[in-house]
Length: 205
Image (cartoon, rainbow, N blue to C red; front, side, top):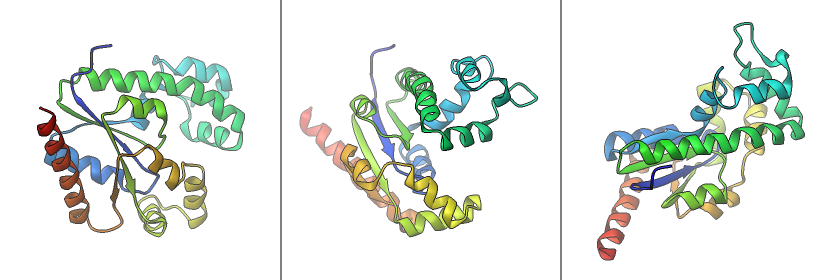
């Protein structure tokens, strides 16, 4: 893997927090190269990719669609109801995903890279120069999930219950952004954090 030569920002937060909005702001206004770990993980499950054969072997050919691709809905259903299977899938996909994500981050040529995930860990934290937690109130998250994905209250709450808690997210973060309000309010918080980083770097140099 190439030697790290860029600023790596980790962006963490739960479902419905509005991470896509923040990623768009970072990309369009501040020149960040964006990597989303869930998209990388999906790619690695495609036929011919690193995780495909291992997942197919673990669940059997019944997990495949007629076109030979992994049925993601069926896979999600299987691991949601079987914690042991979920651990096995994570053991396969997580190392491959992080290796692919970090390889892309270090080789993309950008001076600023943001890596987004809903699965914070010490290993990920150690790879980042800084990590932000995107907080959004529970009520706003549920409303957004109902509006954007058509989820019921029950489904939204069930998914949120299976993710890290607010205290767990905060334990990894250097800073917090409150995304419960308007996009402009969120942008001002981002601007302030980046200005703080700029001031810190100037003092070091």
